Every structure is written in structure tokens, then in C-alpha cells.
Length: 256
Image (cartoon, rainbow, N blue to C red):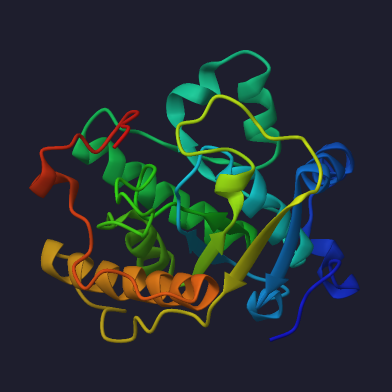
């Protein structure tokens, strides 16, 4: 795999101008904390819409993922709670950078928001980062846990490729549920690996019923897990962690 050290020139036009001043500050700051090695960045399309789904195990993950996607040549956009868009200043920044609001008030509202986001994604030719687990993994060893269907639904409704991503090492910068960032040298090594698009051919153009979405999400989580196994040089548990089976809430902070 090819390490991508800087964005290819052909991808420059995919970036809104608002990202340049933000990246000028954020990317060097992230580089002070982590030495990010990106593999597979060339797999992301230079133009057009896509969804990318990373594993999620520390609260500093979004910064690592954003820096990696930026270095791969695309502007990093996340799906975020719609309530954040109502916060002064922050809401303006989220809207200006094309972040996607997601409603959590009800299942119908969430479904409508996903459909709206997919239409926006196709129209703008944007890439969106979606955490398939929905929150930090509850797995004690930080392997990917059971996924939710949002990333798959978005990719299928928009009819765009879905890329799995895995990274490891961010926990050295900030522990899971930690409150402090380790700024002391040397920089912490973080490896990021982007895989080939998930094979969703069997589900494209088909009714998106719960069974189909769950099966497609399993394919995604399998691909993310395989990438993380490659990075860590270990095998993940045979059975994926399911918070419900361990009497754990699936939202909010939880410390094992």
C-alpha cells in the first residue's frame, strides 16, 4: 500500500475554501500530537460522493480521522447531532464546512435526516465520515463492537461507495474517556488504514428493510475489524461485543 504524505493536486478542487484556513491551523496541531501513517488513501475517489466508516475508541478519534482524510485529498465532513448546529459560532462553522446534521428525536426524524443527507451528498459530490458504532466501542480491548445501520443506509440510499477505515495508536494520545491529551514527546505513532469499498451489490436497489440493513452492516463491521487486525497484528474476538448482552447503555460515557 502507498503511504500518502500530502493531498494529490487533482483533489484540490474537491475542497471548499473554508477548509483551508481551518486546515492551516488544525493539521499542524494534530501533527504535533501524532505521527500519522496513512495507507490506502489513494483508494478514496478524487471526485464524487462517498461514505467512510472508521472504528471509534477514543474521543480524539475525529481529529485523527479528519487529518487522515484531508491528507488523502478530500475534505473531512462528519455527521453530527443536529443540536450542535444550534450552538452559536459552532453551528455556523459546522454549516460552513458542510457537516451533516442528524436528528435523534425519533426514528422517523432520523430516517428523514438520513434521506436528506444522502440527497445532499450526491448533489454536492461530498464525502461523509460516519461512525458505524455510534459511540466509543464498549469492547474492553477496544475492538469494534456491534455496528449500527446509519453508514450503510446512507451509502445505499445515496448509491455511493462505502469505505471501511481502521486506525490504532490514538489511545496513546488520549485514553478512552480520558480527560487529558498527552503532548509530551516523542509524538505518538498512529497508523490509519483505508480498505476497498464494502461489497454492497446484493443490497443496492433492494428494499432497505431491517434485516437487509443489519446484514450489510455486518459486512461493514467485518471489513473494519479485518483492517484493525492487520494494523494491530492480532486476531479480534470471534464474537463481536454487544453492549446489550452486557447490560451496557449504548450512548453516553461508559468506563469498563
